[in-house]
Image (cartoon, rainbow, N blue to C red; front, side, top):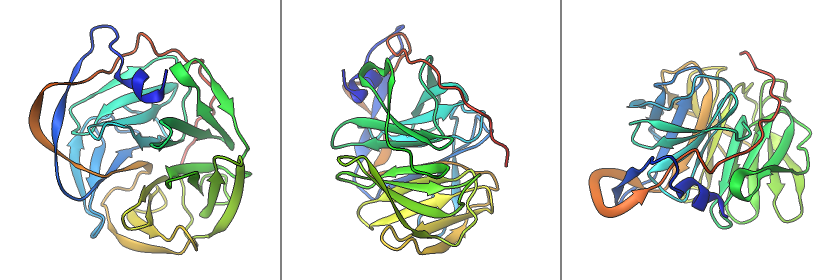
Length: 268
């Protein structure tokens, strides 16, 4: 089964209603480390943060990624993953799944990728296992799908901090793009295809950054007012609080089983 099919599968009677989508610009979501109520939207022009609600995530370093449903996000917990309402109304744990510091969702192939402590892998169908892929040669914390066969990775913690890389899904090869010049730590990464820009937010300061994916040049967008790092996900559609009859987001835990990876905990 595909990643999205598993996320949508009914298990344990957990059924979450979908909300209608309204037309408009995309939304940049931020899941703050060590804050179960720390789901925010970040303004991509000013950097200002708007509190949305809960993620259910209490650990660090947390990953965040979109799914095929604009109303749902997937985030990492200390020993697994969580399915998160994009409106901040709650989350459901996915027990038994491998955790990750960075998460990237390939919408073309309905595939989820993760990185942790210098390793890189894909989640297999049904979350029964992971497949190890080429190691990036750096401690990639921020991960984002860039469209096509490209995934971007941003190094933090043990570094080299601030180095930007790209990964070719077809060739299974990492390439160095450049040094952002920012000492990123516990950092999240997201890609905005319409603007061809990467967004980054880490614990080294409270700023939201824009990064050129071709050169790694980084510039400050603005102050989020949040000191902690966390995960970022860019979703190309706004959520409107209008129920869609018959449309259901099916999230559960019973069918999702994946052996946990051994993980060392990081500190800022």
